[in-house]
Length: 110
Image (cartoon, rainbow, N blue to C red; front, side):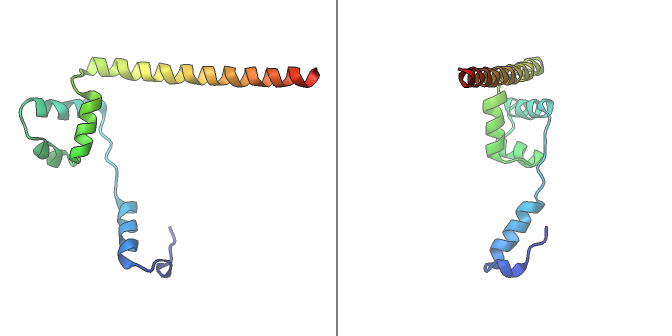
């Protein structure tokens, strides 16, 4: 990314932009997330768990609200249902578009 330094009047803003570009997102699998959540159920402090796995407290609590109390089998069922739901939504969207196209075609002929 070629950015001229003169474009930025504030040096700190420029450095913060570069830092944001360099930050890596860590992807955890669902099984890893469940294992991390189980550690809290075993009595470990959230701050210690977050430090150990390199996540923020907010990320931990987001995971807890989404995956809290789930087992791996339940999580797999959830993923399958989400996939099926998205597939059905695409089917409905395609049929709706076809329906509108047919209506437009019929209106033009009349």
